[in-house]
Image (cartoon, rainbow, N blue to C red; front, side, top):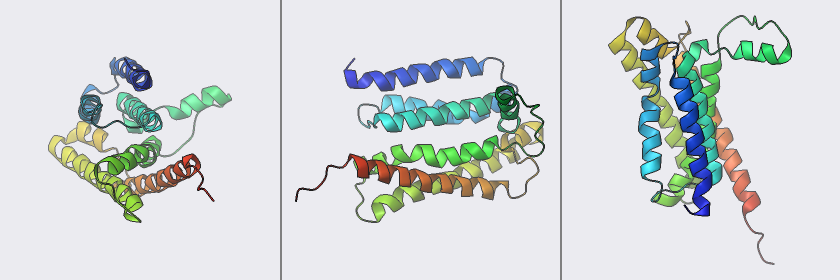
Length: 209
């Protein structure tokens, strides 16, 4: 294994270990299977196309963090991730924060933020947009994916119905849940785009005078 391959391989091995651990006795097995369709498709594609579509270590790190956050959400279902209890255990509080569980909103924001580095590199390698389109196309790409995901959630909830459909949809009684999720994914993508631009600006060699 080449030295440059060791870091992505280590991230993959660590994620597989985390995924297997969280696959043991998830709170709702059927919902876990539905939620992880994304992982079952995306991770093998990244592995199979590794030589043809190589991302930076920074992008792979961001993808690893996102998939780990998603694996946690799938284990508990997004609406029941006990993050408040975890915070209470760390801070010494009682963990009785009332109201909606916002873990799903956090992951939607993280989707836009953490996938943006890989998406920018994807367009640089395969489309090479110039000028404003270099930044606009990755943003529109992630926004479109957010819309597609919400449509898939809606269709799945209609198809399965009952408790499984409600658990997968995870609106928690908010009629504007889908719109808020898409808005947060867009906000995350905008922030991610700013981070990518800043990183590229810092790493770019100064112009000769």
